[in-house]
Length: 329
Ligand code: NAI
Image (cartoon, rainbow, N blue to C red; front, side):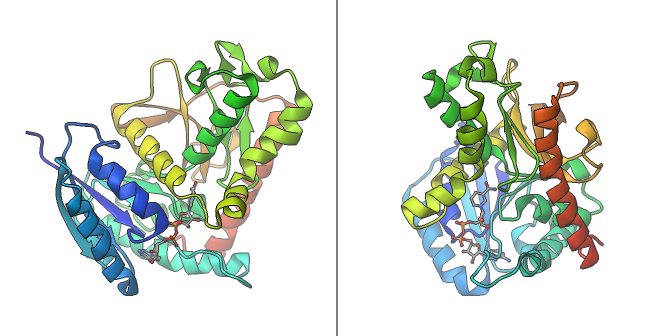
């Protein structure tokens, strides 16, 4: 039988971890014939809680789960990691400025980048979920000079899936009829969910919708602010849906996107669509043979261009801030 794939998950005792780990161990992420070995990273005070999650994972008797290790040391947790899901981060607390958030996370993601550089497997793939996800991924990437840059990605798949769900409800078509959805830019309220390249049953989604007022006044802000709406309704932030999106992101990266579709991933820019090289920004991507590539040559009209530019400008600001803090090496 196949040898296990080593999957490291940070923030393992958190809300997302509580959903994500069970999906990974069940085979939803890497497929029904790939055993997994989990390596969980938590901060020291949460090691007991992580142990409890590991006990529950044991109690599921998942046929594909070949072992679980828990540590508060990134050098140990990332040892031999082939997939690293960086979920744990420092949440924004009351009174915290944006700069405080960037620097608190900067300390986490510089250390984790270095540990991945020194201890992970050669075929490492990294997905950053912890916010601010794009900039945390940028910091980790820049602190891991020996890891090829294209192995660092950040998650906009939840935004992508939210956009699919909103469009599906609006046009009363199943999500399986929708192709070519794209989230551009930052995983933040400036992200741009694009209905001008998405298609419903082969027709341009914006034309099927035929309601610019809904597109601008409802669709875009609903997707951009969905995270806040979930907190308002549920009393805590999206967790199961975030975990499901992480599973989708890694599954498509490893196993490929469908031949007639693409997905959204935040990846290091090569300058495509005028996004400064090296920024981790969301693009339409296809995946094949374990590698992603940015879909080329889409036309961006003035409306779309302005929104992509606004989100990318925010990423440039975040990059400049963490560069100024000396976090990019
Ligand atoms: P949570 O607060 O329930 O769990 C986070 C866990 O990370 C905690 O157990 C904490 O002890 C741990 N942690 C903190 N620092 C760590 C470190 N240095 N190393 C290892 N573990 C560490 O948070 P939740 O709900 O699980 O969310 C996690 C992150 O994911 C948050 O930053 C959240 O904003 C982000 N998120 C991102 C989404 C996206 O679409 N990109 C969607 C939803 C959440």
